[in-house]
Amino acid sequence: MAEQAHAPTETLALREQFNTAEQQKESSTFGMWVFLITEVMFFGGLFLAYTVYRNTYPVVFAMASTSLNAVIGALNTAVLLCSSFTMVMAVRAAQLGRRRALIWFLILTLFLGLVFLGVKAYEWNQKFVEHHVPGATFHFEGAAEQGPAQLFFSLYFAMTGLHALHMVVGAGILSWLLFHAVRGRFTAEYMTPVDIAGLYWHFVDIIWIFLFPLLYLIDRHMR
Amino acid sequence: MSEHVDSVKTYTVVWLILLALTGITTGVAYVDLGDFSVVIALLIAAVKMLLVALFFMHMRHSTKLTQLAAAGAFLWLFIMMAFTLADVWTRGLVGTQGR
Image (cartoon, rainbow over all chains, first blue to last red; front, side):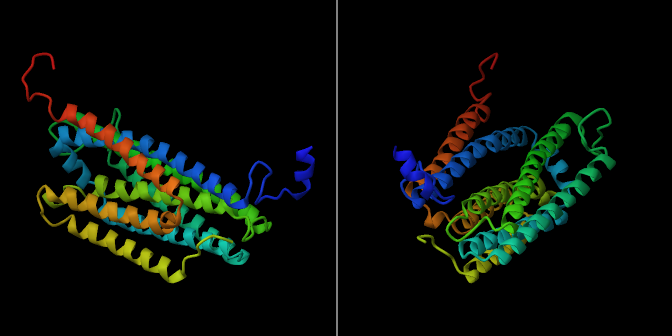
């Protein structure tokens, strides 16, 4: 009975299971944060493994780390930070109900995300060329022990790979947002998907903010 | 709408600070600071994380519940790190056989 009374007034911004639009928005935001917290633990395990093995093999890890190109790494970090800026501008445009601005900032964010992945692909390819990919043909020049060096590059590929996977998922989410933004689904009253996709995108950015110094920069002064 | 809409200027300033910090952390990595290199690198990363979380993720406008939950993530991360490292870093200290 109550359902029938509510059904005609139900909107995207206020589904019938919520009392107010504000409550619905807060639930969505909180849901995304809870997911991100599980992601902290997900990546946390890898960061922990990195800490333990870097502590066990400090010299080999320093050598392996300095073989990465810090300049490319720094530029790629800048690309990612720019994409976070365009993402937050997209969210702002959505908050203000500016559809054209939203569409353009989403396109820019998607573009920068793909640039990041492209640079990452180039870097990975370099590792194959240099035989720095763990496996049968692995060879790291100058390291007395090949095992610990393989361990560093295993962690390098696992951490940057998992991060890149999140970027690919993010690119998919951005495409979905773009599709619906073009169709005019988001308004100043209802832009929750843009908002929580922004949270996800910035989170992936934060992961890279820690990956960059830990993988590329630590012990660089020793060379 | 009850939402806070931050100014373009705020976002631009935060963005430029983030880019500057990236440059600083890269540059300072080539300076020999001994064990402090790690500390400085992680400190800069933590500042960048806070800037992104507070401004880009609107943490400073979030509800107390969300802020508490996010802080909780670090509690669990701390427990995982501290307990594991308390084991790994102290192995061999006692000299027990079969450690």
